[in-house]
Image 1 (cartoon, rainbow, N blue to C red):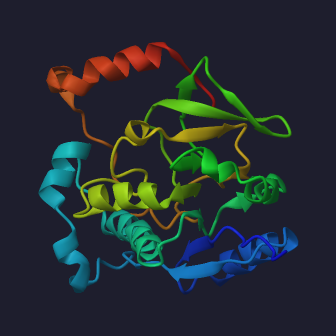
Image 2 (tube, helix red, strand yellow; image 1 turned 120 degrees about the horizontal axis):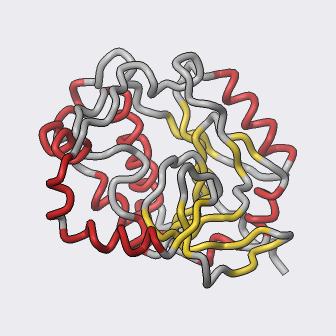
Amino acid sequence: MPDTPQLPIFVITLDDCTDRQKTISSALANLGLSFEFVPAIDGRKGLPPEFLPQVDRVAGARKLGREISDAECAAALSHARVYQGIIDKKLEHALIFEDDAILTPDVGTFATAKTYQEADIVLLNHLNARVFKSGHKAAFDGVRLRALAVPCFRAAAYSVSYKGAAWLLERALPVTALADWPADITEIGALALDPEIVHHPPETPGQSTLAPGREKRGRRGFGRMLDPTYARRVWRKAQSEKIS
């Protein structure tokens, strides 16, 4: 009987982040997992001109309450590049890491147990994630799958199906939001692992390639209460608990 093909794994990285590449390469090798590096778009010194048509800064500022930095645009475009690759290769599922993700041994279990088949998007790492208090499902070894109640932050480690990649790509371009996430991933039934099995270093100017040029989010004011999704968000938040 042939071996079951391994879940495709993609690691988004900038060319000069060699230390990060060595660290995550070693971590994946120790878990017996093969992977592919995906060159990230570098926006640290300005977004390359060829990508400018793929960004709508006016819509982005309206959505975020501030202008999206070039580095943030580049990060969003880099994730979109992976989604396009998944679609082009017709992959049923894939696992995506940013190069500074800190892996635990449970990542290997996640892959071999095929936990990624449980949803179109499964978050292995998250920030400010709120999940519904009820309805969780056991995944493996004390790790549970929890349904996101409202959108959360961070796209450092997640699995995505072909359907999920197409859904994200459709909403990722032109860029009007951060790489985490281009749209409300609760709409596609995203799940979060509890506890998370991938960690992330603190986002400081020295560690993060996104921190430079990032401004604080502007105030949105009372206008948000006129948004038809606002009441839904308030209700779902009331039914949830924070896990990160």
